Amino acid sequence: MSMTSGLFAVSQSEATVAVTKSFEVAEASIADLQEAMSRGGLTSLQLVNTYLARIKSIDKAGPKINSIIELNPDAKAIAANLDRERKAKGPRGPLHGIPVLLKDNVATADRMQTTAGSLALLGAIAVKDASIVQKLRDAGAVILGKTNLSEWANIRSTRSTSGWSARGGLTKSPYALDRNTSGSSSGSASSMAASLAAVAVGTETDGSITSPASLASLVGIKPTVGLVSRAGIIPIASSQDTAGPMTRSVADAAALLTVLAGTDVQDPATRDADKHRQDYSRSLDLNGLRGKRIGVVRSQFNGQSDLVAGVVEAELAVLKSQGAVLVDVTEIPNTAKYADSELTVLLFELKASLSQYLATYAPASPIKSLADVIAFNQKNSAKEMSHFAQELFVSAQAKGDLDSQEYKDALANNLKFSQEQGIDKVLTENQLDALVAPTGELAWLTDFIHGDSSGNSFTTPAAVAGYPHITVPAGFAKGLPCGISFVGKAWSEPTLIAMAYAYEQASRRRRPPSYVRTVNPP
Image 1 (cartoon, rainbow, N blue to C red):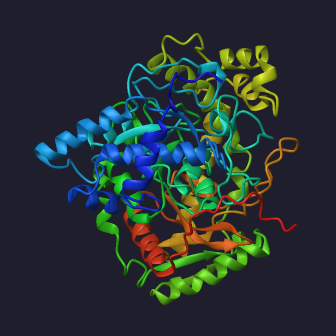
Image 2 (cartoon, one colour):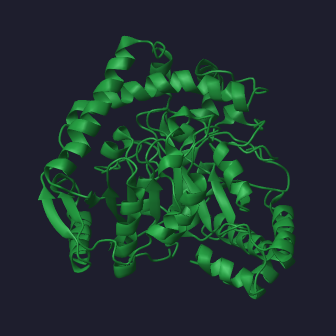
């Protein structure tokens, strides 16, 4: 597996100094780190060295969770420069000097590669930053590295194994090493659970932020599609793709989303983002649940195992104790009407958008299109298709262009039944501020023979509608994390963040991982 030389070279003396003398970073929040840096007890360079030492001892040795696909060889120099700037001018804002990890489908114009975990894009150095990367750099964040992911963000095969890529191998759950991380933002989830950086960025088309976050006892925010620019993110579907925060707390997620959000001329979907974006940290309200009418989506409880349903059912009492009015709703209507057409849209949009990304961000790559990726995988099948095939890629390649009536009909169907006749309908008819349900099932045993067995989840309605979805740690069953989801109408991030924060602060369900081999009894 090819990586830039010396990416994981942290000397023993550096690691020892970082671990024994630096600020304790495990579970530390952005506010904790900024407070330590403001009083002179910590520098960004020390912070980077401490995280590098943790990556060496946890990600690459010890439990070997394998969440980091590549480290930024310039991270130390960037941190040192930001320390000098802090001393001379003060911090730029909450992310000044804060190490951030990015999923390896987010383009960075530096010495790191952007590959979506695929061997086909090895050596592909982006010619410019993704728009969100530029925002992070402008905010003073330190891009620490890239995280592993389900290859191509899990759009290659119907029987894939989440958390695996040909370039990065398999990312493991730090809560049980034989369990799956879900995906596709697998490395972002595991690295955050293990405190390998302050915050991480994931991406989602359907469940790729919220599902792995729930399985890692994390907060994950899938924003309204159009709040965060997708320019420079290796695409699947323009109608559903978005980037978003994956963090250990709602406060950190709010701080990160504040930087990521905003209108970008390179992404027409964001034309209204500046009208809606705000400092989401102002939404951190301990009374955020008081008087809110929340719909409890009973079909999602019935669709989960008794273990998950029991954990989240108990958490409804926390919502009530914080002043929420709970209203049982049978289901989100009409979800079955886009069960098939969702994939149709994704396949059409994948074929159309991938070549555009490659031409703009990786023009020197010999891979120019989805057809080229398919051919590369066939030629290198022993490495690329050792566990599963690429039948979804082949199906996408067989689709027409975006002027196709099949595509137009499928997209119109998706939007109608997920928005007006779906989430909007149930919210309006019941006078609700949000919906709540278990995020998904417990982490399953990784199985390269049969692929994922993820079970039921609550990700699809918000994903297809392009509406915001926040998952928050809800507790544990048999030692495995469960998440509780808050879903609302378009642009309702402030309301959802307030609810999520009030719940989080009242419940305090997150626990750090113990890196056990298994939770199965002997």
